[in-house]
Length: 159
Image 1 (cartoon, helix red, strand yellow):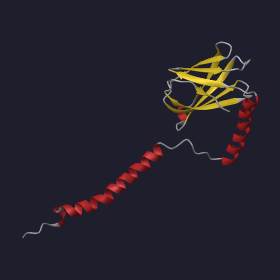
Image 2 (cartoon, rainbow, N blue to C red):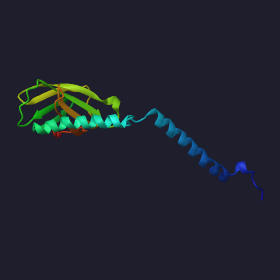
Image 3 (cartoon, one colour):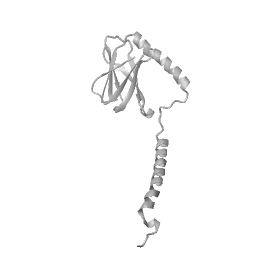
Image 4 (cartoon, rainbow, N blue to C red):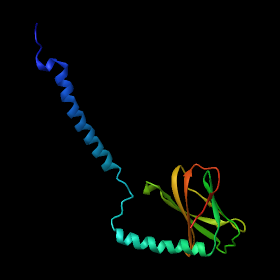
């Protein structure tokens, strides 16, 4: 019986391939992580916490005013409707914040289109999960909602 040299046998190559493939996969993971770094990490946590507390007062102001609104996003339009509330503002600001990609965030101005209805033209058609903040132009109050687009029904704005 003739014994083949080691480099002509299968098992040494299988055993060598396992650590080589693991190393290549680790290098690929490091490259992918460096290219797509997350936008969710905040450097100055203390300052961010103080800002959050100031923002909560704006939501409390909306609760004090007993604002009751809903948001409908259809194609490239956003419609904000307030029930039982008479707002005197001629326009509202809508901030669309993507859950994971800061580069997709945008802000639009909704103009009054009736007694308690505001309409805004969106620069893109929404897809995926979005956090939406609605406030007046002076930022006296704020309301928010989370939206999983596309959606066919209105979503309630909360404090």
